[in-house]
Image (cartoon, rainbow, N blue to C red; front, top):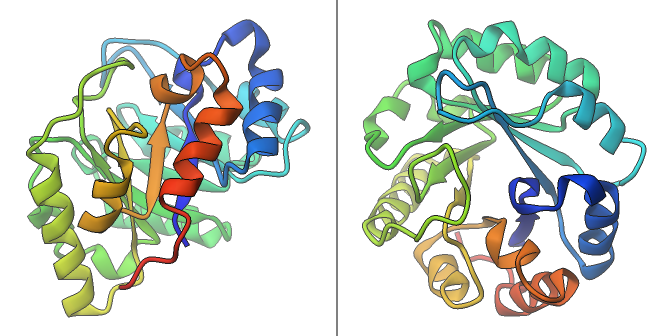
Length: 222
């Protein structure tokens, strides 16, 4: 089943708990938490304290995207805080296989995040170990960026590769996802849709989630 994952990067930080409750009631499947360290990307955002607080506010799984240098140093913090899904960028990790194992050994879902300029080939020795692949459809570091159209070909290539190898990984996409393109992206092969600006800059965030849910509510043929 396709999944909608509203991104808190675009939410009102003063009302994050309220924002999470709104999208949960509207049918969201995950809550996406962007963690930026000011080094790997030029921005600072959320930490494990927010993840721990959100565990008390929602039953939805928390999907934590680590845009940080040396993810091995912070993965234990987010595991302890209650992150359910954790992804990081392989370029930022000295030993991505070991870091994935750390996440999976805690019984959580482990993924790798690929920037628009990162080739799929970096996954060759790791695809079988992944629960999901997060394809960035914008360059990471800030919200409200336009979707990079070349990402559609990358989604389709990854879908073919997963089919050919029988790997279990889901395809998650992040960046520029909206009601205007979500159905086409689902046809390309995406299954988990991170949407920030399209949800929280909508006059009714719950309605935005419900609309996206209606557009991709059917199961994906893999």
